[in-house]
Image (cartoon, rainbow, N blue to C red; front, side, top):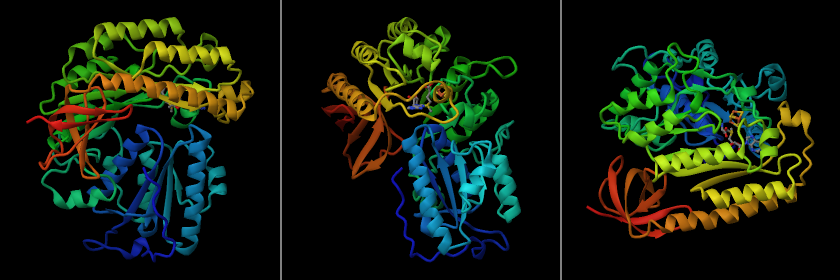
Amino acid sequence: MPKPKIELETKIKPYNQHSREGNSVMLRYFIWTIGCQMNKAESQQIAGYLDSIGHQAATTFSNADLVILNTCVVRQSAENKVLGTLGLLKGLKNKHPNLQILVTGCLVDSDTQELKRRFPQVNLLFKPGDFQELIAWGQKQGIPIEQRLLRGVYPERDSSVVPISSGLPQNDKKRRARNDTWMPPSPCAFIPIIQGCDNFCSYCIVPYRRGREVSRPLGEIMCEVEELVERGIKEVTLLGQNVDSYGHDLPGHPDLADLLNELSNIDGLVRIRFLTNHPKDMSLKLIDTVATLNKVCEHLELPVQAGDDDILRAMRRGYTMERYRELVHTIRRKIPRISLSTDIIVGFPGETEEQFEHSLSLLKEMRFDVVHVAAYSPRPGTIAWREYKDDIPSEVKKERLNKIEGLQVAVASEINSQLQGRQVEVLVEGKKKGKWFGRTRSNKLVFFEDAGDWLGQLARIQIEKTSPWSLVGEVKK
Ligand code: SAM
Ligand code: SF4
């Protein structure tokens, strides 16, 4: 999300001076989000509920009464952005003391007292997904934040329930106008299915901030998706730090494959995606399910993190390169058109040139469609931070990162060029700079120009131009 413009001079009206329908309070809210899809989904959820009870999205920090920062501290670079934004808001709050600032996401650890001391400008800190805290705070302020924001409140189908916010608000111009400032309407929605992570990879802060795994009941997810589909949603992406462990903590132990089977029966739902998989947990049953269910897209996120067994062991990933290779071969054999994305970390403590070369040759061998590469960033409190010295100089990390990015540009360019002249099916998500855009089933971004209204439609596009990052084509009517 682009950094919002800070207009310190703009006069803001304190939230308690806005009113609607008698005594209830109308807020102008601004949600600032960085980090993973889970953060984006949770921000959409909060925005949706604030909208549904009559509050309005503001266009900048400076014309908001309520600012919510949804933060990420997975790497130092993300944490720096969060700290910078908190600094800017401190200035804004000095000018406008009635501004309410709420902070959630992975910055919030269990020592909220210390965070309150560091950031006195913040009115409330609540853990990622801990909407109970947000509701209690809203009630104290006289701001009616909906109880329905809590998880587990969709036990049966009820058409009055407004589900998570990202629905395409068809035939509802008022709602669409309000949401436009926050997020354009889209036919795609993110659905968190499992919170937290039990894995404790040695470099990763997420389990310390998001807690242990908690799956949402299958019936609750079904109700939510049915509601979204009724409102025009065509594609859902199921989210979890490790979607492969979905259901282990639920009665009867339904798994992700069971959930995909159930979701596939929803009429009107066209596409299903899910992320992120963990190579140690991805099952044959799941691969077979993806191979057989038409609605499940041919795209998987399978983070490898390193191409060397010793580094994988130090990362505590729980698999070897042999197991990873076997898994990819099985996936490609059973789902020949699969597109694969991966994540990789360079400069993990002690990573030798030779070990880095193993990562590079793995990428050459596997030819992933997309590679997200990150330089190792020590995160206080993690196992790697405690046990290993961050001994790879930052220039070396940068050099390794550049090598991987350079290789991947060449690989993705070759893979995508094979689509030149071919027809693909695109679910149209919106318009950017006068061009429609959407994604193929294999998650390739496609642009095309056409005078028709394609939002939320499936378009057949003949690909005319390709690049490592996106494709351009023409509609075939
Ligand atoms: N659960 C997913 C998995 O198992 O790969 C990914 C979740 S993690 C929040 C997203 C990505 O951030 C990871 O895949 C990893 O590459 C990167 N990451 C996490 N901790 C990191 C660190 N300390 N330094 C650099 N990159 C990191
Ligand atoms: Fe972090 Fe590992 Fe959990 Fe992914 S699986 S969130 S990298 S601890």
